[in-house]
Image (tube, rainbow, N blue to C red; front, side, top):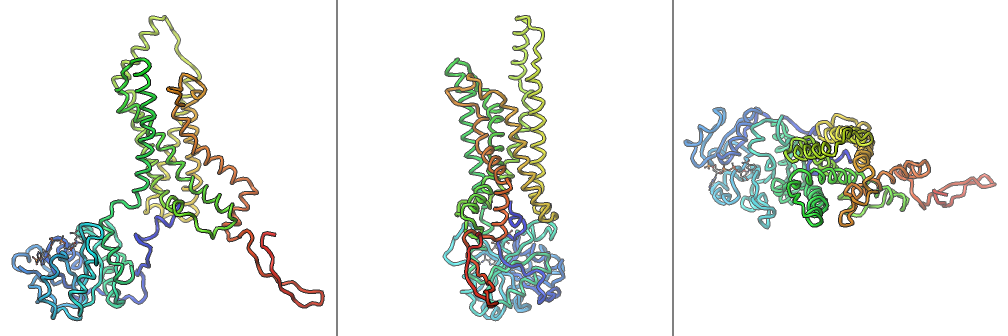
Length: 488
Ligand code: NAP
């Protein structure tokens, strides 16, 4: 998992934080047009950050009580006269109603904080629309990615990044300074053409999670159907036994570890494929195919979903003995054994198998928890690169090996028992082993000194078949130049 995923800003642009050219903006007067939720939270935050605030409302008398006493609430035209920077906390549909203020607004900075209700709702962004209505003003897009709640809750809570864009560098710098004084991290997103992208951000629903969630759901569906056929449909068709009661807990509980285990292996499989590609082409400078790139970028989410399924599996497993069906079956078995006059039912191998697989399962869950915790940005940021890579890469691989042991000790000899092949379908655990074992074998092969050494060289910039200039002294003592392959 790349650490950059956790450390980088929401969008990979330069942060203006710590800009040596930045000057303290606190103390200046800031205008806010509108008196709604956002305007109110903004005014509170600005006042708390040391700014003078003047709010422009269509009905200042009625709205004044909603604002802190330090903020002046007046008519729109009065408010904009008193300041050079005005936050437009009004919906796009009402921008045109502000056109009467065009003369007083001329030459001032307008901060467009608006959002849309749909992605790419309008042809032009709201900020570009505002700029077209007020050509004599300088429009800066910003603050739309923070909610009214975040503004009020202070810098400790919520998203701290404020994405800013404008065609005017000076205006952008002014708004970035204000954001910084308010405790936010301004992120320079470039010119006004980025406004559309910035406006779409609050509307996106878990963009980084979409693929991993679909992957987890797809795997869940496949394994659930497979287990349903084996545990419910097969006994119904072959023995006319109704085992539908198994669906809510047993079938789900045999499906969850399969999903978790395969997902965990899918965290490490793209790394193996990337290493294969680097070894094959003998360079690290060749771009990976897009699908592999995407896969590499989603490893954190895939890993977290793997942990989520493992945690659910642990809870479901703990609940298994609580079920009434379990108690009935236990009593039924006891009665049968009593009738058959069986006194000792202790099977040493079974006892040991269970002790080991539960113990190994607990260790695997512990390691997965550690991986999940260290992938949280606040924890990841407190680790140096070596610590982070040790936990995510080395401990993660150990978690995969331990999970494999858990699966193997769970399955034990079932793969060799022909009664386990329901409708000729092999036990589920044998299927789950395919990808993880491939990853483990590949990792073992990559750790062989000859391959490891070559991979390390490639990752340090060595390239197969790359020609380098060399200079050799001639017999006469003069130097002659030529070319050779670096890997010769
Ligand atoms: P709101 O509570 O409905 O407030 C909108 C304000 O616009 C009204 O209070 C009104 O103030 C003013 N306004 C000016 N001209 C108007 C007109 N012709 N008709 C109706 N109202 C008019 O909305 P909000 O939640 O504060 O959102 C304001 C802007 O901030 C929107 O563009 C929104 O996308 C953006 N935003 C909001 C949030 C949030 O968490 N709420 C987050 C990010 C961005 P007066 O009556 O005093 O004039």
